Image (tube, rainbow, N blue to C red; front, side):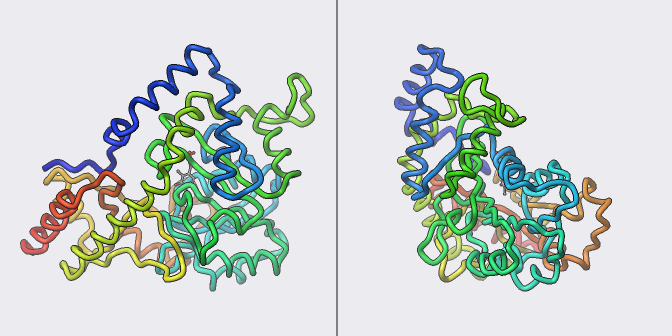
Length: 368
Ligand SMILES: *Cc1c(COP(=O)(O)O)cnc(C)c1O
């Protein structure tokens, strides 16, 4: 059996007719930029997410950058974020000229709330927690801290579309939230795409303007902006896919539950811990083992796709060597980066496939 790490093809096949006609329609109208699907998707996403504004942008990285810029983050500022994330979360802070301040992770691989306040200085302007792997950070506690210190709160929801914390959607706690629709994300386009959501109308307008060359109306450039529009083909595709997201997320959660059961008590495997009061949407199913590299090889040799999210914590990346972080500054993230292993996780995964993954892992530990 061959089990890819992600399988975008079988999802496409399940909605092929609708997708093909949505794409065809954009091409027939040559509505490549600013076609009506953009606004339709923005409205649909905002409505389904339960927020007032959604701004479609070119990708999830730009979404964070645009947010930081329009919140006024600039050189000399500090922005607190988490040690374990995709590079976008940190690089966008750097792009504004500000300095990322990295906090270690808790056992859920999200920002450790007990270590945030000691890093707040007079230069700190914002906090960007990441709801990593599809699971909420301890967002209410983070919100308390950001309120107390008068900091902006930006939720990086690139991996957590429609996840919840105590019955409330992630991304609705802070000033705004950013999403990625990178093809492999829980809601994925067929290329790059992203969005920002916020209940703050004034901020929404500014961000919309900035992402569109600083103009809301043609040739009326009120600020110096950038070009970060979502293209119409992506909006058309996302519009078709959006109504399926709840069912896809539910399938992911069901698969995770099954993995939890069949992986329990194999070798030293630790299945991903789940917050009691949160709804996890399992963008990634990340186990831990002390034999990570060997197991990774073994699974790959048995045609099982695996990945690591992420092999090097952000502050330990070469790009951030100038900030001089040491492993001991982020002990948990340093420990986890050598132990985590992401198994195949998508709605279309079958029990048979997961059984094969578990059997292969069992075989690996039998050889030890
Ligand atoms: C995917 C991702 C992003 C960036 O999204 P792109 O659309 O690839 O630019 C940002 N943050 C996190 C946590 C991500 O996983």
